[in-house]
Image (tube, rainbow, N blue to C red; front, side, top):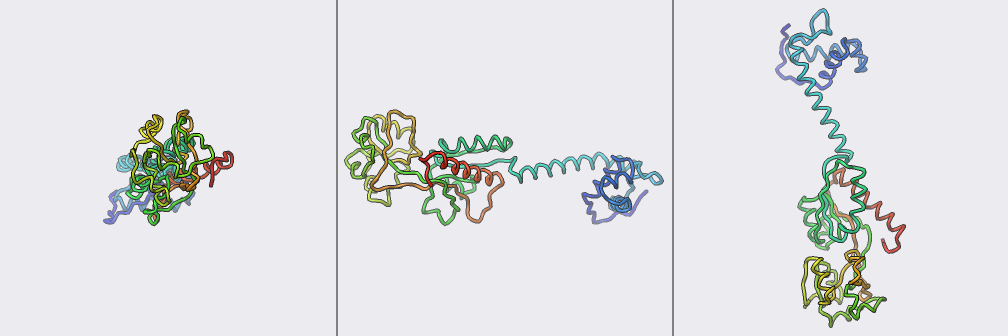
Length: 309
């Protein structure tokens, strides 16, 4: 039967569900029970759908039997509802952080020492989340975060960007001197004064800017070498071509040819933490990752005295 067609069709999801319930249950009474509605309410919902479409979906006199038009509509409505249910499930999963992608930028020392354990736990809990990890210097990780290239960043906060990012401190990392185990300085287990480095060939690396606000800044003025790659840096030091300063986390613990000695004058440390952009909410995946990092470090502080607040 031809019905007047509403020009402004606004088909409701509930109407489509009620239509499928009638088909699946073979009758309006059972469909109403499944929908937890009265039979009159469900019938009104179907009639409203038929008015919007301009044709009957069920034969008159036996309202559980589909019309020819109803049979044409059934697979289309089923297909749409399948797509909708998948979308609903995927959105819910994404909201819980169980799928999707997380992009992380980190300074190399954390990428090699802290993140592997955190990422292992993260991947175990959320195997469907894709992880992208980039390493860069402190300025680089902040720049990537502010540019929107990553969701979260780890490193030490740059003074030039402190007004633009939210910083959650995780731990402090002392600065020390790195030299060959055969170097005369290696005997000074109690620590090194910066003046003891003034006559040594100094190798400048990306973390040496941490000396700039201290009397030791003079070491950065005329370095013998300037190296950006950490592998090259360690190679120069192993071959006794010079000495350098480095945060303890960046030092290769199991390298038997190098030694890290605390810098006691000036005593210096960097604050390591997690960055997010001020005023920008974290994705569900980034929220979970941040919480895992915080919990991991807190547990580590309790078990290893070498880690500090």
